[in-house]
Length: 150
Image (tube, rainbow, N blue to C red; front, side, top):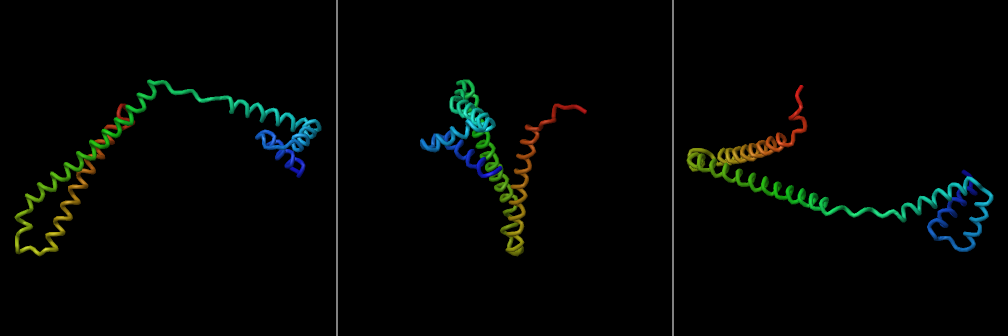
């Protein structure tokens, strides 16, 4: 592409975007009369601009909006439910573990670092158990291929 083509295309874009002054418009009109390819390209871009400027998106139906917001509320509610249930199960398991291990933790014969290790290991085990349970239930519910038989 030579400099004249680049200048012609720059003028064409200025005219299309209504940024060209009178002198530039006159010069571009002369270029159009001399170049049929440029005229065809300008006509195509003009029709494309008219099409995109006049084409307005359709407003969604009320039923679509209700369906959308119903899905959003459902996801928020279920996410909150899973979060609260997970937190509750973690607290109950920790409390049960505490009651089970209270005698062990209050024993003066066991060193403190062993007690802390047991508490951390038990807490981690409970958290992992709840996490795996939640993930297993979620994946089973959303399994894409559960209805497909081999």
